[in-house]
Image 1 (cartoon, rainbow, N blue to C red):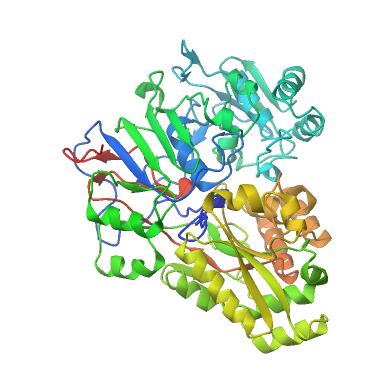
Image 2: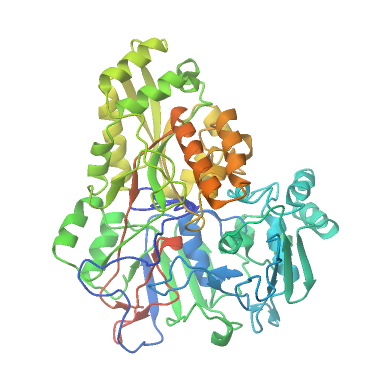
Length: 604
């Protein structure tokens, strides 16, 4: 996820643990703090040129803006894909949306939002171009195409529940799209001959969105890469395919020169991009090389060593065991950022047939809630200073969050509930996790030890980072076959503040949130929770919405849908030669498009 984003890398959001989906971390208005006492914003004169080398162990989910829903996917897209609105590398505004390819933030006063709050008119700025030959402008028609592609029947966007019923005509369009066929030509034909009544190109530079209800968060929602414009050339390829990934068309400052999945990504300058058309990305470096074959420990070691071929993390973060020493030494290259995430958490696979479908039973899930010691998990994730305990759905900085803890650690209570559920001798569960991550591995070990005390045997199922979501959690059949019973995952806000919908709609809203369209990986479905979510999402006042979100939160926990662990702080590290390293919660990292490299240490 943070990815969040959406799934986070881990999560954090897609953090130190798991990467989550797109819904990613981010809080307050600032990006983070530096334990060394120095601002992450450089005060020196920027130096242009050089190669930024990023090290990691995993890959993007998809090299496709309208499909990607993972914090690392968002990190990759930052280089070459632009949105109507985005989050800037301004330390004081990293969770405040600003215009990207749009000319301004639409409001009632400037005519961008209708008086009833249900129509948004957005204008595309001059000079934004695709790197086609010859280069051509990004148009409102491209924006319409991008929104259409989100619900393609091959690889639909995982956050669709956020807006499926919000945009007029969207669900009707998607229902028809599901029957269009499975070839690129069939998908293109359907999009060319059908429309979404709530997404229209008024002219080449004007896009109009019509909503079913007012949504004060709509501009923030439009920061998601899912709403990126898509050039007509994408219709030659299947959404999310490797063929498309190898034939990307860019409107950002960089272009994808080469992509070798799980191995390397090389970004070079996009000749069609102009600085005057992009108020967000400075693009100081000439080239960005991502090495996806470096372990978490090796990444940290190389960044601290100061070699010119190691500048920033990709999907690796400082190992939790090393963070206390880095903080104690006030290392100026360490940044601790706020998040708006639940990362990691433990998913309960309610459709697993294992143990006579034990996880379908409320008492079994409640037994697991009582049987896992949150304090032990927090300790192996870097300790309580970096991991605020989270015992319910919503992080503290999301409107509607109320502190509730229904399951304090109680092994005896857990044993009683297992016996009442018909498992007096325990059961055996399969735990899916990423073994390349220190935090994930140690979390699995803690759960294994804790649950052994209540008679539950836990077996590990390991996954490479690149496969975790796209080959396991996002594939319904894998869950239904019982390949896994428990899994680590992470989630972060798709936007900030008024963002409860971006947790409940993709994760807990029943059938509409089931993968692959949603990210309800455990297939939780509760009529009571569904009703509360619907009521909250259509509330006529913020106070009413907050109260209903709080009730929905409590209902999800009464149903023991998952085991929340922490609202973590995000820890990132960069090499000494990297300047202007501004942490962006939405990408769970420093912004690669705004850093510059010290003269004489500009990579290779």
